Length: 131
Image (cartoon, rainbow, N blue to C red; front, side, top):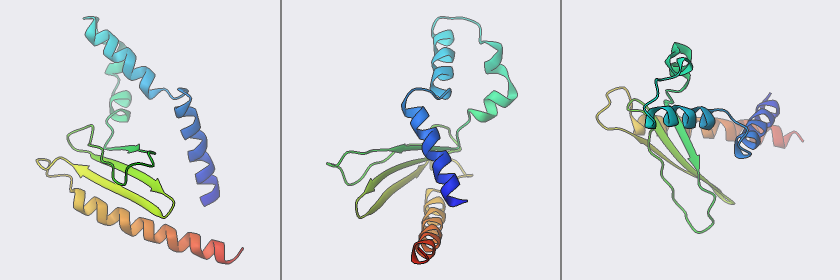
C-alpha cells in the first residue's frame, strides 16, 4: 500500500510540475476575472469549489543545494505552512501557523509530524529489513 501511495503521489507531482494540474489554472482565471472587474464566474461561487480551495495545509519544497533551511507560510488564516527540504542525510521541515488563530498550533503540528515521520521510518525500516 505504501508503494502504491508513493507511486500515486509521484504521478500527481509530475503532472503538477508539467503544468497539468488544475488548481493554478483556476486560480489564474479567478484572479483575471477579479482584476478586470468581471462578475465572479459561477464555478467560483460553488460550495464544493470553495471548500476544496481553502487549503489548510500548504506546502512548498526548496531544492537548492545552497540552503539548509526553508520556510513557507500558511495561505489561509486557519491553516499551516510547511516548507521542507530533502537532503542526502535527512529532511528539514519548517512548520508555520498564524499566532492569532486559536485553531492552529505550529508546535503541535510539528510534534505530530515528527511522530508520523518516526512511524514511517519504523515501517520503512521493517520493510527494507525483509528484502
